Amino acid sequence: MRLATPRQLKALLLPHQQDTDHVRRALRNLLAESPALVGRTHRAQQSYWYCTPAGLAEAATSGELASPVGRPTGKRIAASKAGLREHGLALVDTVIAFHQG
Image (cartoon, rainbow, N blue to C red):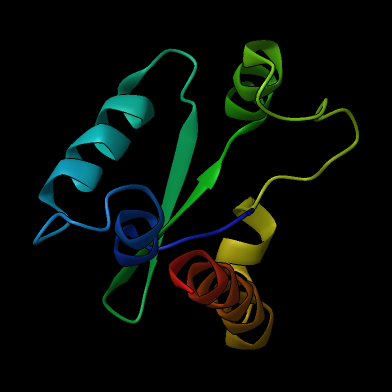
């Protein structure tokens, strides 16, 4: 997953939470790390979050993900025109649907 909204992350990680406050707080903490583990952009009054290269490296070190070498972050998608961004978000919605089903 290269790009997600706080609502999508809540649905995947904390489905029983009522709101996105906990997810947003965690994302802000990851953004405040040095180097930042996530990045954020805003479009159409919505925040979009993505892993930075440091975040991908940290995830790979944890053993939870494959090595991020050569894998782009979601920054380009987050900053792109709506078509590519909407496609990425639709993919996350599909993952959520499978996860809930």
